[in-house]
Image (cartoon, rainbow, N blue to C red; front, side, top):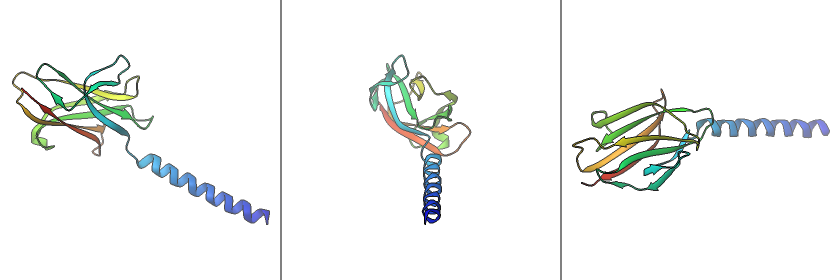
Length: 138
């Protein structure tokens, strides 16, 4: 009887390890992507918003959700998320002390009023982790 119970417990244990390991490995590596006008001294977003003016700095921040991911690629767009609409690609963005990947878009001269967006990827991967949209009001 003890042998049967031990075998069942081992099978259940192995099944749980496989299940949670799979969930951990396949869930998003970055979460909570937000836009803000600033970040604090540790790197957390402050003044979260989706509307900016030409005088503002725009920060995109996404929280690290897996300890082994330490570099990201962040791509900024004007309008739809299409290759031809890219306005800035930031490679090798490092995770900061607050466990956020943060990138700053200083609005260049002549950037038009309208809808914009940003997507974050794990560096060298093509799977989108988080995205956000915002409006530039002139």
